[in-house]
Length: 153
Image (cartoon, rainbow, N blue to C red; front, side, top):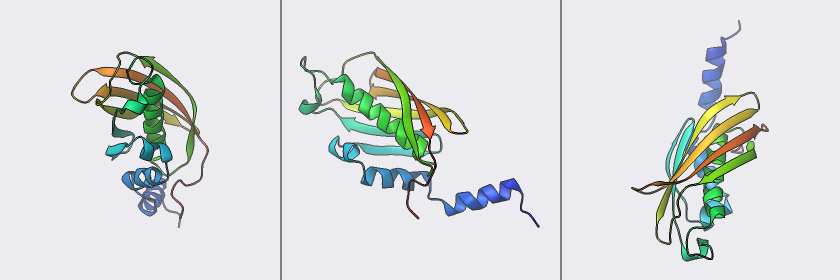
């Protein structure tokens, strides 16, 4: 007797690590997450939020947060969100819109959301804001699901 697809999917989901476990595992092996002092605020299917404080060594020649820091934070959030299903994926492309400059001491909040996912492709949006303040950058990322588990069995 064959089990229905729904029963099979439920059984597979029960044997997989939960979203937070996958993100916590990724954070434990990610040097950028650690060196930037990023913290996980929320991890649910299709969405995650992270926070980070801008340090002096993250600023550009004009004393504001370097655009590469914004991009790195958003790329991490998008990647963690896509990989949180415990299926390995990598960034295939991304674009960023810089809206405002953050400064040293500002706490940045990034929220990544799944917009589309089918087959081996996914599209994710990330919004970075100053905690309690304005949005400073918007990022859209295109992910390629390459397969295999994120968390080793």
